Image 1 (tube, rainbow, N blue to C red):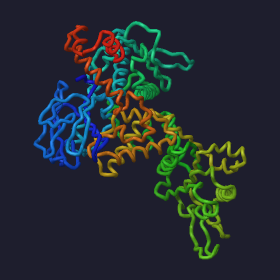
Image 2 (image 1 turned 90 degrees about the vertical axis):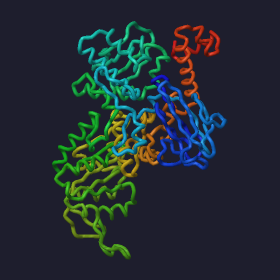
Image 3 (image 1 turned 135 degrees about the horizontal axis):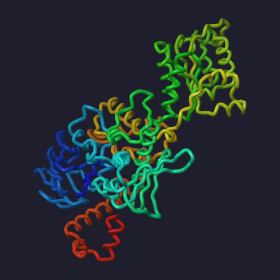
Image 4 (image 1 turned 90 degrees about the horizontal axis):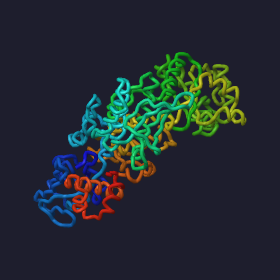
Length: 573
């Protein structure tokens, strides 16, 4: 079996429907008890029902283990039989299909947490080795691109020729690029492009291009060059490359940095230079007491930055209290903020507001752009006089809090339209922090996914080997209009849908995100499955024919016209 394909057992009927079990070479017992590698808790499934053996040469053997209700292959009861891709299997009330899928889509590229179950641990592919001459077995497309880019840059730095770079393309991990010219280009300040690394010889009037953050990857050839299939991973690789270049290095670190990303540690663990600068300046401003105004679209992490400012300040041991100004009507908002005196209305008791409760600490006013005009005036008065009046009160109360405010609105536009006070804006905007959207900080997406994934596993007491390359591809291709909050909620939901020991894959993602993958990338696509099966048949026939096209046609049972047409369609010409 080709190194780029792997078998998967997909359950299509029963309580485990939609589950997929990756099958690397080895033995897998099927049954209803916990000790089975493939556990099917379905009526009619024996505790030890059957065994699947995947051989190193790509063969698959199915054996019944004297089950009560029998084991079936393509509708026939069997005791022991050799299987091929597409076989329909039956175990009691469970039905499954043996499929061939692209191993890069099934490979785990963001590892799980320590303490995984034995079944989960055995499902994790070998860690990518990135030393010179190291293996890429188990690596997904993004890691392979990173490793290729790193080696190209190392050769360039050592004064090697383009021909030496071309030798890389002929190695097993990049054999599908052999014979093509690949270039890495960087856009300069004047708009011109400079080729900083290249491999392969010759030229072409047609190039496929993938660009990200001023860097481009060009591959000679038409659509059959297959670069589009890994666009999301390639864009992530180029985004990482741009980040390393900004730090003064043109040689990327080992590919395993992306292949085995650990969760981001702390709020400042960002690879995006704008976010890094923002948090560095926020930490400096936190030393004083000036108000901070945080701007950004919904879900970009405004409260996370506010809490960072608080914990970086001398007030970190005092309260941090947050209030959403858009969530309450004016009367309740003022009572929550300033407090209320006893007897203002029937049955009303004296109550301190957030500004009193947070004495010595920090008050975070979220969505301040939605604050009513009357409340804006009272807040401005409190800021100027450093005292407040409760609703219905006459005695000023000293005010000792740090003000942080945030909004997704354009406050300058709000001021021009008369919906927000100019004097209050200047009071709150002593330091303005603008958070980029998730789409503007794409290089942080793998780290954020890893952070949320590990956290949700721990919170729910679950074990999983990690996140597959297919899932990361879909997540990277999606636009994230809800930004980090939407990503966090997506990972929360996906983790809850995991079966024990199962990696987070495309199947656990929402349909709107699954749709980001091209049809050929979808793990369950019939078209993709048929194409891969045809590729396997052609590779086997070509190997058996030992270079004889006539013999290969005879083995495949097809005409000369179909043979050469299929060779071109399948990229095997």
